Length: 217
Image (cartoon, rainbow, N blue to C red; front, side):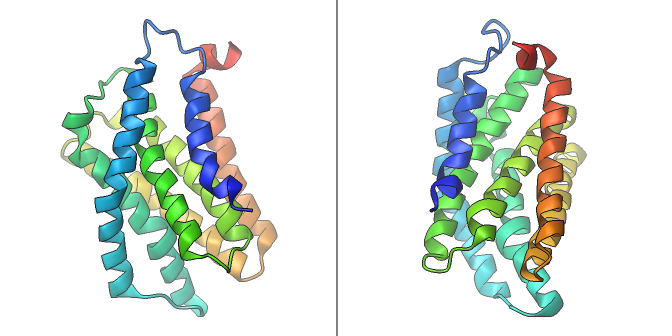
């Protein structure tokens, strides 16, 4: 049942890697796979921060506190920690400002980190899985990673104000996805589904506009 949750990001990563990017202008597959596994390794210290935050803020199952709980547990802090890890390791990752390498490098790192985050969420909710955890949350995270990776080129090299803006982009999307999650728990599944799918469609359209030759090929 948890196959979609645990495999969506790794499979999408390998799909992107094997698209016909034109190897003279795109980074090597070995570089992208290495960046993915750097994200996997960075999950462990990042998750320690998230556990501390969850311990401080707790969780509520009622009213507006439920929205705040979903925001901090599933969206805001995981997003900020993931993008913050990217900013901390940017020199070690050696991602250049070229359009293809920037997009692919950022997506590789973030998808590695968040893929393990999805596995952690599967373990955390064991025995109480629902459509939100199994399908909606991983779809939202895929949309966010695509949009953050596409925005990263405009804010490269993510220093000073540009780094803060990249964090702000992630935070804004996290708030939007928390609204969709909140609607799910209010039994407004139709609106929740719509607010989950629209950002994914927007990210795919933006990707097609940015890399038309790759899409046509």
